[in-house]
Amino acid sequence: MANLHRGEIAAELGGSEYTLCLTLGALAELEAAFGAEDLMALAERFESGRLSARDAIRILGAGLRGAGNTMKDDEVAALPAAGGLAGHLDIVARLLSATFGTAEAASANPR
Image (cartoon, rainbow, N blue to C red; front, side, top):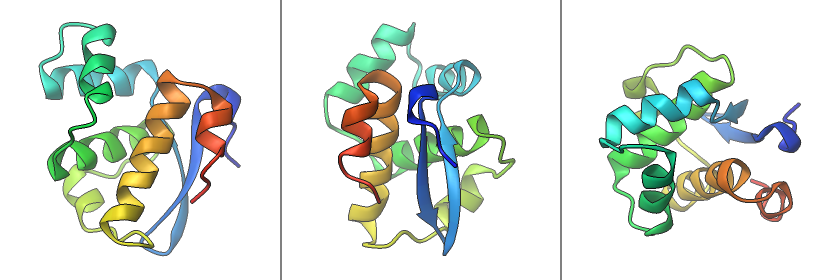
């Protein structure tokens, strides 16, 4: 079960329930992927509200791996979410909110 106080969220992808968490290692992975100099630059990038599909895949993949899943980004890209693209973006938004915002904001829009 996901623990919002540890920055974890629960999400359904491909018909299975997963826990996602952007650990320090996952955040370092995203810094490298996005060419961000530090965590503040990474947070500012996400605050812009502009994400590509590739960005969403990277964030979801890092979150899955941060929670202990070994799934690669190409496998993440093939996972459908309820609601299609909007469902994927909802998961990304909840994960970023749990990491950079408040646990209450992340739980406000479950799945």
